[in-house]
Image (cartoon, rainbow, N blue to C red; front, side, top):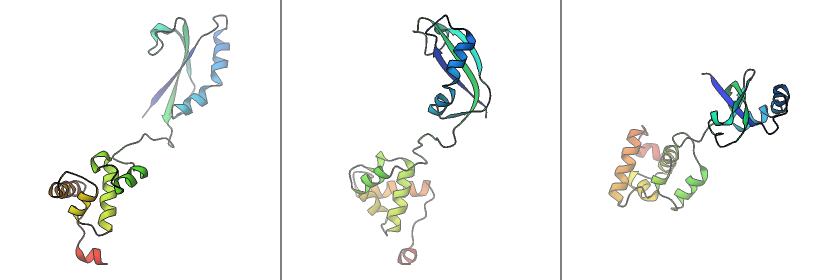
Length: 162
């Protein structure tokens, strides 16, 4: 998948040549790309536009220098995803009863259900412990539905004893 990283600099001094502006901006490209969680993969295309034509710069009264370059997302950076990522602080808060299961992301709920099942708790005990709903029966049903949806097997008494 190809991406284009666009970086914009205001032109503060109209007396500088295009080459001088590019030379000055070029020193910032790697740092700004890193701040954007991108890795530049090719040479930039340099353009000068009236700021009014560049989204996000319409209030600026002068011109801007724009660099457009091919880039890829930085492999070390990935956006937080509640379905994939676990926040250890939220897990501990849930175990301490400070937040409910409904305040957790999917991955955190799954982690807690599996962890509490490994500790030998059944669906109703898990639902009550994580305050999944307002009654024990509803809590058990919520955990059962969650386990079924996410294909978390029920622990058998033999597996719990082992």
